[in-house]
Length: 279
Ligand code: CAA
Ligand code: NAD
Image 1 (cartoon, rainbow, N blue to C red):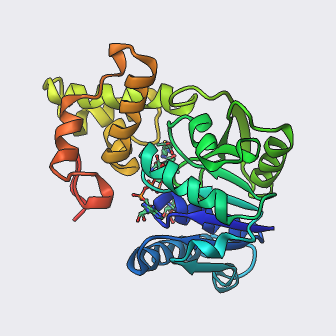
Image 2: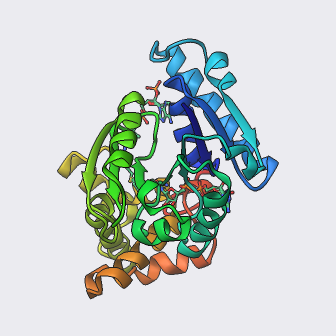
């Protein structure tokens, strides 16, 4: 099986890594060489960590050797499954899928790792809606067990079956749900993170206190503000916008503080600053 990944950011890099760990031949694309280099460095660090703990089959070099890094979309022509993990923006993703629909062999399956954008709409853009699906990995991909599998309106049973099987081969647990804004994971998670940000804005407590209360009080592995920084505040805002627009209810309105921080370039861990500093 030849496995394609578009986007070498935190999710795309993680998906490419886990696919290669599972023995697939992988090609990963990003728009600039420097983004590929950054993605490769993150993969190398993660593989070294897993190897050190005896959790890797083979050596890091063997796994890395199965990943081809490219800036050229034509390299996806013979892929059996391509997972897209680029910026959470419907117009940008739709434009990419229009191109991939032309490039990837007709029997190839196209999947999106989108957090919230309607699968059915991206499927239409791809021109092959029966062979299109949502394959939503969780962050950090090498450590998290779930893949949320989202069928679009026209996704075929065969596509769902093949993608479910691929997720299992990657040692993940696939769980299916339907195509509604935010699916299940982010419809439930993201309003909680948004509410924590609203608590900061209203001065209910300091960020550290909010995180501690949720960690120690609810046994969450990360506090909500640490998690928002980890996901990326730009991604959190994009997801809240989709929920607000798609579901209509005011309870999904993005916190003004979240919007302001994104406008200021504070995107969390990936930009070096969010609710906490990572510099
Ligand atoms: N690859 C390999 N190893 C990694 C790693 C990675 N990507 N990330 C962390 N590790 C390692 C750490 O280096 C650490 O190693 P040592 O024990 O040798 O120090 C080990 O894993 C454990 O890490 P931590 O000590 O930081 O502790 P932890 O027990 O908190 O585990 C965690 C880390 C699994 C990330 C945990 O904090 C967690 O589950 N956090 C919540 C994650 C979560 O909610 N993810 C979902 C986000 S929402 C989403 O993904 C959907 C969306 O669309 C937005
Ligand atoms: P990121 O910002 O870390 O990485 C995105 C990458 O995509 C960047 O390297 C960027 O250069 C690249 N890119 C942008 N436009 C591109 C294009 N047209 N062609 C090729 N590459 C392009 O973002 P991320 O956190 O990895 O998120 C990627 C996707 O995964 C989003 O849809 C997001 O909603 C989803 N997702 C994110 C998380 C998370 O916790 N961050 C979890 C699950 C799903």
